[in-house]
Length: 416
Image 1 (cartoon, rainbow, N blue to C red):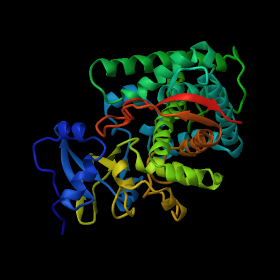
Image 2 (image 1 turned 180 degrees about the vertical axis):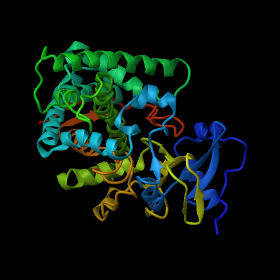
Image 3 (image 1 turned 60 degrees about the horizontal axis):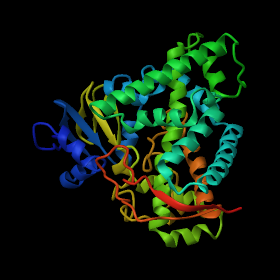
Image 4 (image 1 turned 90 degrees about the horizontal axis):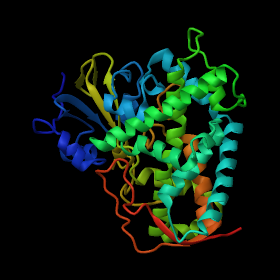
């Protein structure tokens, strides 16, 4: 028999999800004692899922589709239109292959080396500054890395300006009013510039190394053997550039963790083996992206509940990473928990879940881990700094969430 799905009481919960932010789904899971429940957002019936089993269901390609799931507001700021996030089936698998081709051992090693050089350069610059706002500076650092890695000529726009534009796209993706239109304007300006670059690559007006994304994406052909529309190429290039710069959020939380958990810092000083454990716990513990969306592709039943075609469904990323059934003491910062983690693709999903090659898991997750390992190593072994009094609180209703001060540092010194 089909069971009645638990419901979040009330006519509409749009204001609640905005005010509670990241823990909204997990809070309802705890109240309703269910990993699946129904709510209403903007007048629409929505199913919310959390936990490992629910994540495995959500990434079933036959049961859910992404093509009409993302709100138009988010498409115009965060994702763009025509990108890989909105594809399904063979088209998604083929386009995903374009991104996965950039994740070779050699390409990942290149971004590690670029990040290492950038940290040396920026640390030397920071020595001359009275104070450093790590979040803003790391956006510039990662903009430089992302452009050099993809072959996009950053000198055409300038690191500071470009980092601000890329930041607008993920800082104000779900905002309303002035902030939203600023985000849309930044995306529009960057897309126009990237379209011109793509056309110049195709017309051989500029030379780009063949292993760089600017060249690879400009010459990529779809399932029918056609070049992608140059606007779609621009969107996909931004799907590399924007997430790399967004790692600045994680870098800032990494610094916060170093400040708040000095006993863990002592473990890091003993050697590099603990670096990955630490950054994985940063990615699990701190808020990054709250949830992801899809629509039911066809009617089906799961655990006795009915899922109707077309129903908007949210998978709780933050809540799955803090789920009491999946993690022991989930609200405690404990890097050692990852020493025994099996690498399950559905219980640890800060950037989405599922398999890399055939699913919707973020192709840039390896890049995130590599960049954070280099960044953490520099903060622990290759620089010293003091942390002045400041507001280090962060709000779960802000997306993305960040320490309110941006994490200020003083007396930065480069250590060889």
